[in-house]
Length: 374
Image 1: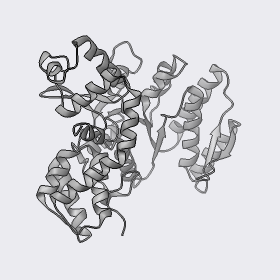
Image 2: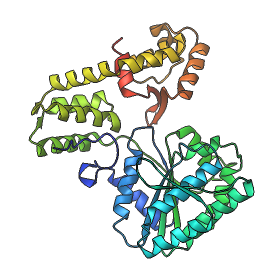
Image 3: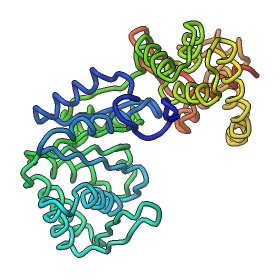
Image 4: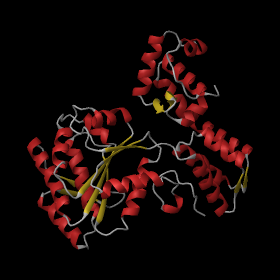
């Protein structure tokens, strides 16, 4: 029996929980020719949402969806090759549009190799000079725009382009994207600070060019009903007390909630109660201890102490306050601020902004639960 709580990849609508409002907004933007900036912290289900959206859009005629993960790219050339590779793989050669795509890619005189694991073709264009790079990227986008279809391109981890050595990448993309009529972009990423700057700062090229959409945790009642339904479909029962503990312990952070439920299902217990959930969570932390101790060796003593203090508080609204510092013996406010900045840069801590105010929380939920027990 397949585990109904996958922790990676997209496995169809039956195993996808909620996100109806986000899907509705994304579809509306696409229908109305609006580009979207999709932001979420890591492992909240952003990629799964995009794959679910593409699955639904794939049912429509003359709609083609391209998912481009640019996190591994280091420069413009990498970005162009990644885009060209995705385009080549997205259109089956047996169909007329696929033949057009193959002919076009071939006209760029690429070097085509094949992935040793998937067997899919990988494109490498000869674009050594900046002018060649710009021309090739422009050609790719114009070609897509001229196809008799709506093209939806998701550029995942889009903040990566700000790390390219070519400082004109943002301006170049904005210039090339602006005249396109049939191509819709979803600029997604997990670095809220960088993406917000890129799209809301009035001196940046992409200022005011998209609708912002932030992805938060799934509604607790919806997630609990989903978990309960999946368990009951496989002849398992889970108590309300156990469900409440799972949602509280994982903070409804999608990945961590899925891991706990995946493990509970794999354990084969037919009646899941609070004690069995607690035992499973404890085993998960024990298995991760080697990794957590590695984190400690990468941080200074002050940074580790602050990380542990934030975990024990669960969420911290004023990390430089006298009360918080004295309670955890953290030294001076300036030292705390420096350590906090370092932890933010290392993505060990992130800042969440809610109506009740901004607060800091340890990024890795399992690490946070492990630290609070020390």
